[in-house]
Picture 1 (tube, rainbow, N blue to C red):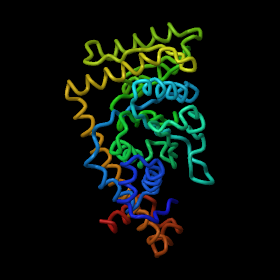
Picture 2 (cartoon, rainbow, N blue to C red):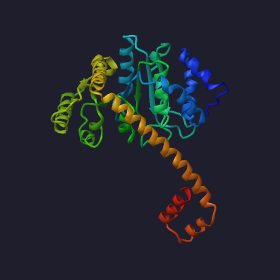
Picture 3 (cartoon, helix red, strand yellow):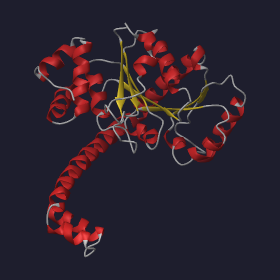
Picture 4 (cartoon, helix red, strand yellow):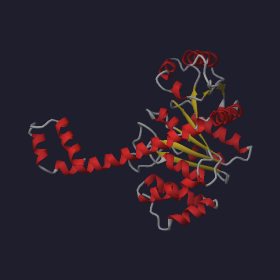
Length: 318
């Protein structure tokens, strides 16, 4: 757990002046949650709303990190400040991220205009970690032009990325096969761009055809039809097209008014998540108190079933 031995306003001021150390401390406090995280969020909120937020998602092994690394390199040719939040699985021992994208993106070490942070899911496989929207705001406030969120590629977190990102990139591989059918339940719905990575392998053209057919069936007259791009990220092939189309989608969002709508929806979803988290905390506290009273004996004796006990707890919380 991060310990803040210095005033938060000092850390914020230093982060605004470009201190990577201060920025890292702020993000650690955000991940820990609590009053410090709330204070940081309140301080930086007025300075947000300028960064382009890109989500990269897809199944494990699709090459998301390699694509991300190449995309950062491409963006830096235009002198763009880029921050990466890499959502990794949580270590059961330390509670920290175990894949460590700062290792996988080592080529950017020493570039003062690139900031990379591995963020642990901390059990939030049903969605992104609750700290991520707040972390995005901090990175936005201190002046990063693009913020890229790369998902762990497990569970509903793949779909939840669209609740935070302005533009969602779905990465697949040639021979996606049966997985294309699974996309009908989710990934097809959230993709603003499709990237067929490792496109030098057999089956790339068929995968593109499959995706095109699915997009046409879903949206006969789309307002935005997700482009299907071919890349070999490890060689840097096609990365310029990914950056250009991500920017094109952002401009379309701005011109159509969708960007304002999306960001308003994102903020209200965050409000719901915060309320849910805090209500759950109150309920758990009440559960612990209830378990130590006579109601627990009634449960053990099979006099009351779980539904009735839950109703009793809800009444007590109310």
